[in-house]
Picture (cartoon, rainbow, N blue to C red):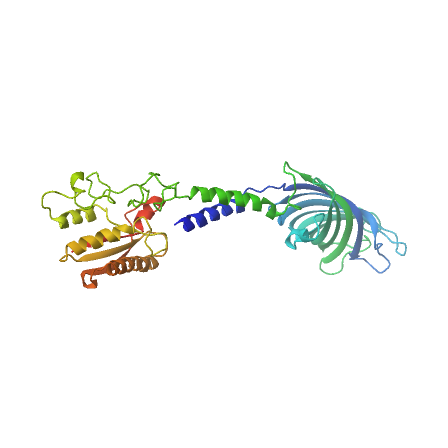
Length: 419
């Protein structure tokens, strides 16, 4: 019983730690600036942009649902300009996007080799506009939709600021005219693509000490020292000072005399109610005065009192959860039954096994049968002929409150019926 309680309490403590409240900040503001490069569509090979065209900026806000996943909304703007080998042109643009974010550094366990470098992946969709400043379609507005994705490298400077470097690829749709503004897109509206490379900063918001980007979930679990202290407290709670088989925190009679028969709360049993506890009563199921060691002075039919004790549930053998081995404090009931049957050789007995309502019904039926058979075996070993005994499992005892741990303990039993 102690091992079962210890395991249950430890599992509860660990489960509580595993569901502790998030201990990290979730919001951040992101800004950056750098280069862009438009790849398509152009009206001819005479137009192109530099591989690294300085002229892009972005600002955004990010919210992390967990340490690994979140969302980002951002706005970017800039200008595509001609390279030295191109005919002259310039085109202004902006885009706005909503993106999903994955903390790839945390997913890949970067913390195993560094706690200052991170990596984010992002992917999403949005809308935008391109406005050529030169050529045939100067100042014409080209409204677009887009999908984009990219990677953001991070270097943590402090718990509030991180240096970032981002590379993103943008694919646009419904382009009406070319990036250079010199021609309409031929045929159906085409797809364009461009990329950006920026350097920037993340500013982390919130009252916690760390942001989700850098928070390590393992830190929220108890240390070895803390676990050792908690286990020590549990062991102290499970001590059985009076040796009656009931731990102190459940024992309502902490000074039970040695050898006393007790119930599931450690209280000394007096089955026949004559004021003499069973372990001192030579006739524990027949009331009698103390002067006669608890036995009646006049002749009494013991069988009737034993039946009464059975009907009032004074004689039961109790079991631990999912066990067919009698608990120590209740095994003495088998000795009382064996002694009674030896004094009354005409009596036959049915042993009834029960289980609580935890677990599948068919499993509990088999468990109740094993409990009944286990008690039958003990009686046979005590000298009772097997022909006088029958054992049967009755499955779940639905008469108790299955939400109560104490009631479920009373359901895990075998009882007896005198034939």
